[in-house]
Image (tube, rainbow, N blue to C red):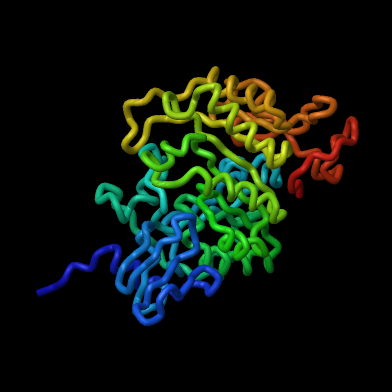
Length: 358
């Protein structure tokens, strides 16, 4: 009688031992391990899995994903979104399967929740790190971005890819929920140029009940990434009735500004997806209100995104000193990048504009 092989079992064949820096032996005799790749810090017994379902303990060895992609695409860097990283350039975006969160409005749920939700039906494609980087070179990508699912839980694979990407002259990027640990940020720091973190809400009860996380972990990761010298941008998807109150938006903006007023904050529009189909889309007026709140809280670079042409000047990069428009945008299209020619300084007044401009 033939035996049906599940996706989980096939994925278990696409693994390698975890990096020493991302695993702690808690009890050698009982083969208990603590995974350090995300803020859950799962204590994993022999034969069991972490919350993400893709990192598991096999005989006292933590096995982690390697050698495949669940999604792969050439994207504008603005789609990530990074607005202060080589504007107008393309990046090769790659992701694996699985997530340490369970957001009911996830727009990549078929990738992130495929091991929790039978409706996802996502599969994978085997590929080596070298083949991935060669694809990036072939498509003239300026960088490689680990995205789509949560990259923190596949950090060993990302670093394997990023080492080769760096050698090929590419930038390296993470698009993450920010549920990090000090250990994983230290592990990633030598190999990452830019990091985008989703700050989904400022209410811990929402993180715990609706998302499957802890707010403080994300706040800590924002600070750790900034302190590590990695270029950081933060995004908040504005979901009506969930995180769109003015008080909450002020809390988010003030926290980001307390880390650095130079961190770009993207406020973007929700659309109904996955298990949250009964909530209306975010309006342009809500995005503009959120952007104005960010500026009032002291942030120098605030962007209202993914409703092209509806949010006025909040799509553009402007000099905080003289208000000159430096990079005009409509969706993923830009009018030019003069900062690449001026060493990142405003061509009118000379103010240094932080970012990676070429």
